[in-house]
Image (cartoon, rainbow, N blue to C red):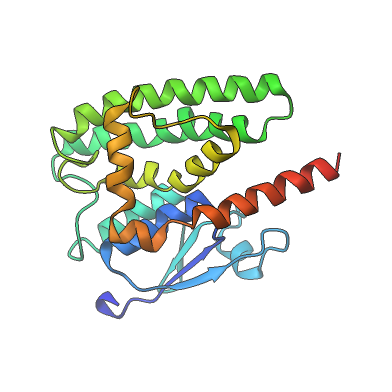
Length: 230
């Protein structure tokens, strides 16, 4: 571990937000203690470490907790600047652009995707799906602009936006399996479709992304439990 730092990640394996942090840690080559939380019976450590939101992920670095997935990712990049690749560009304008697209991924893709997957009515699900596909189209253009001909949002290497979007890839594949819809369609968004294949072949992605088959079984079990409780 770099510099003898003590890193502990409080999370849950299915969480795409936890996956983002795992991606950043893997890209930096950092070792850490992976603490699996029971979200139905949250630990005292989690409640003490994130008393405001009481949510995962939380990264505890030498006893100090850092919360919220993309804040943690940027923290890792800054604190371990001399370790592994830089996730944020050196240029201030390019950093600002990356920081613009991160909340876009969350607000315009991830939020409607969750509505699509877990909406209470078919109308809610349909609207979520519509908004998610609109966001994918916009992100195709963002990738074209941000990559500058490279393979990633960060250019030739993985950057902040790659981690933000990459963290949800396993869930997107699960959604494709459940719905029959192709989210990153090579015919409609060829750059993103190629990016997905490139991203999942990264060593860091192989280490951090949850197995799609296991995640699919988890999603089906959750769906069945939700149906049974109605």
